[in-house]
Length: 104
Image 1 (cartoon, rainbow, N blue to C red):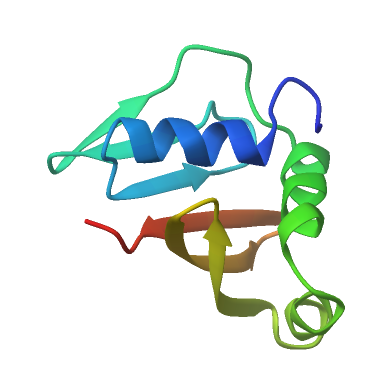
Image 2 (cartoon, rainbow, N blue to C red):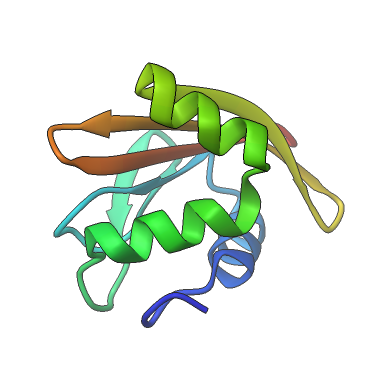
């Protein structure tokens, strides 16, 4: 678990809510794209450290290396029975994650 957030819980919530996308950005609470509108989740702000920990929990060593070398990476991730595309990129000094639900 990373701070107040766990990636498994966030992805389960996105799946249950039928969110098209989960967004994690530095100093903002998690956000989901629901029916074309951004919904900000109630909860604490996500720190850069939180995002890095959440990313390391789902990325392979090769994907982490690609992010370090290129500044971005993209890969598919299976969580339970749901499939996602993870887009990770470094924005300034912070990691930004956009996780799209492929099951919609």
